[in-house]
Image (tube, rainbow, N blue to C red; front, side, top):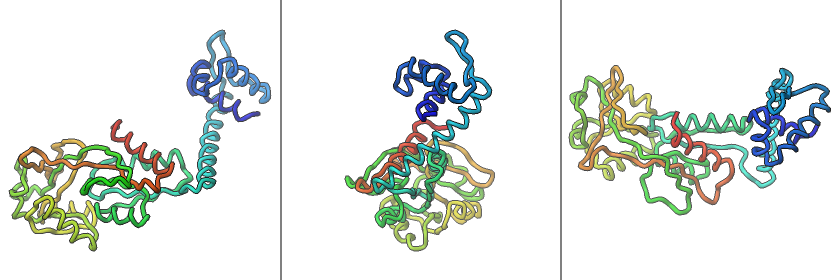
Length: 297
């Protein structure tokens, strides 16, 4: 029983056609048919029932295809890992992602990557922009999902994913809760809640004050959940970015567009990693993540 025979049979079952299977594995249709027949002869039972130019799969064939497909996937994973060891590639993946982004795409990309490579550990780390930047410079994460705050570096791969819409979340008890939109100046007397680790507070404060122009006092939370509890308690507003424009509100928190003279503010989001540390794991994860934004669920 040869590996190619199993591959050809699984391709026939997957595509439902000898012709399509031949195109998939890049051999002739007659070669596919011959190898499937040889496989059946060696096994001693039928995998498919032929009806002229059509066929159906026997119960034994369905079982064999299901089990064999799983085996082929595992074999490909073993090959991938062995190739990585032979070429000195990484055998784990560490992903850094922005702690204030609200979206499902990073989690979905991690899930899809693990489904392809179940034996490759994936570590995900949330942090502020500068925390993530520091981690990747220190080789503590392999690839980042984050916003753009500085000029793009030609020492990095910079894969643009989308432009995020900026909102502020406020308690329904807030004096600004029922505004249709808010400006930075309208929020000057309301504390701004930022998500940052203790050692990143000054950096986040400086960015929001000196780059974005916020004039509020600043409060800090360690996670988005903690920040939302502070918002719900009417301690201030929290900036947040989403992929899509939305008027969604909760029972206690309202989300209001943050606008300027040119309309609603937006931020660029990228997948980043250093060119000199690029490898197949990073590139595959980045491709999966990019696909999540191109093909939303």
